[in-house]
Length: 316
Image 1 (cartoon, one colour):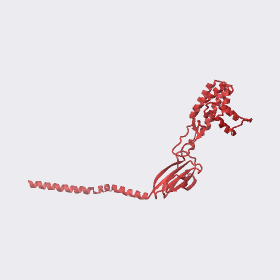
Image 2 (tube, one colour):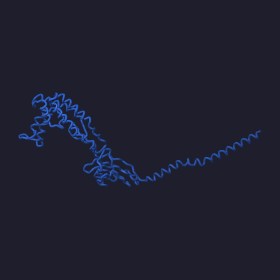
Image 3 (cartoon, rainbow, N blue to C red):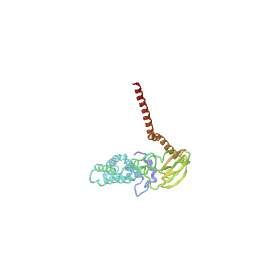
Image 4 (tube, rainbow, N blue to C red):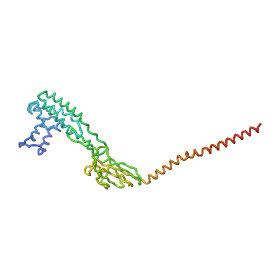
């Protein structure tokens, strides 16, 4: 940590417990400033769950040395090195408290073991225990593209001490659909990730437009719980959108562009049936006319045979 922390802490003085020139009950700003330089390279992950003063107090109890003693500084540096690998840790947001308990329990372990074994041995055991317990936590759910706010996939990043959302847009890509004027079409406002039950759904329509501009839509159904399916009997060209969630906090918005063409599906199916019948029609006649063609062939063959016999007799 560098000198940039000093002006930052001075700016934050009004929010920190205690101020210079006062007698606070707890640690004040001046203690923060003095301790910053005694925590060289401590990774933010360790500071996610422990106060710098707690770390300084821990090293004081372990070493029995004041802050300006080299043994105290070496203790803080050992804690800093042990915290560096935690930078790679990310857990589901619901596991944040479990991660906090793991880290704090490791620090409490160091406190309990200070008179039983060397600090180096206790620190290595604490680090090993942290990784064992981390392996037992459930993995964070992966974000499912291409769109939507996915609460179950939020993760706590140890490197930043922050809960991060999926970096996906709320608006889903427009789905182009080919439909007929008198064909009923059913649209589903579903998403591939878990959503709360009975979530409000708002359906909207932008006539004759292929768009995602919400200002161009008119509402069809407003915030109806569980209305995840919409059936349109006589579709018109344009974009239909559904908004999952309350208007101020959408989980996702889906868009369906209806490219409507004329003609009746039923009439088309009737023509297809007639076409298939025509294709099979010669095969239907073959069995009925087969005997007629066979009889004609036999008659012609018999006539030719008689003529050959007559010629043979005459030549004798």
